[in-house]
Image 1 (cartoon, rainbow, N blue to C red):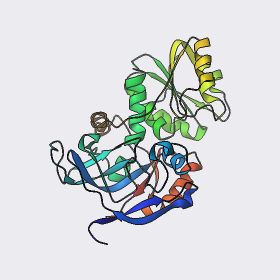
Image 2: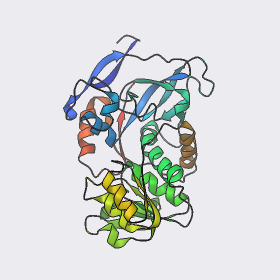
Image 3: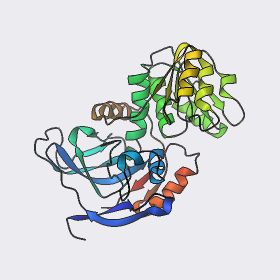
Image 4: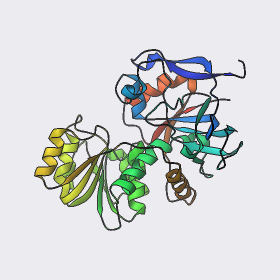
Length: 322
């Protein structure tokens, strides 16, 4: 393969995991203020397989062909004009460009330098690639949107997933009392991460087990058993529901108003500064990162099938050999 080409996972149409195919594509060149990163690993998120199928961020990316992926961990190969914060050889991680295409399922990516941060020293690239989108979603929801503080009661739904296991840890680090929903098998692990209470959603309605909650970090959505609407029942008057997977429907907004609680939609944004703070927490031992399984780039289709099956503990990651 020539130096100006690279391997990338490309989909030429919307569909199932089988549309993901490794192809030879031009290697990107960094513009001024951008860096070229040699990708060692790329995280996989639910938005990836939703977009692959024609929902998720498909409306932003447009019609295929395109390359999925927003989570990157790798090494800076080249810096564009004007970059002073990073240099060639730096190990970095990031969630560049979201929701526009970042093309992370590839050997190289380019993006603005300040959308990356130095990789946590305590993590290898596989675990670092599991962090950016999920951790930034949790951080921006818990810290920047809900302004969680010590003594508050916080409910996290789907707490054993990628975003959920970070939300539990961030809320607990801030001194909140954390209630986590997950299947019973995940409860001991979630307790290790800092959950004060756990609810087995397969046997118990969380609204029957929790109440007087200040903040709900809602990661399931009304499409699954009306989880967002049911979450309103556990909030104290004036409490806040952060509705992450599907936003806020007109019906959900009306129900929140009738219940005298607040609800807000949410979408994560690139944030290199927050990733630096998160890396510090990881390196200090305050935040753990869970990777259930990793797959080579050529098995992106298998990884998507695994993710779509549900019940993943933490994250799935693609490894990229260079």
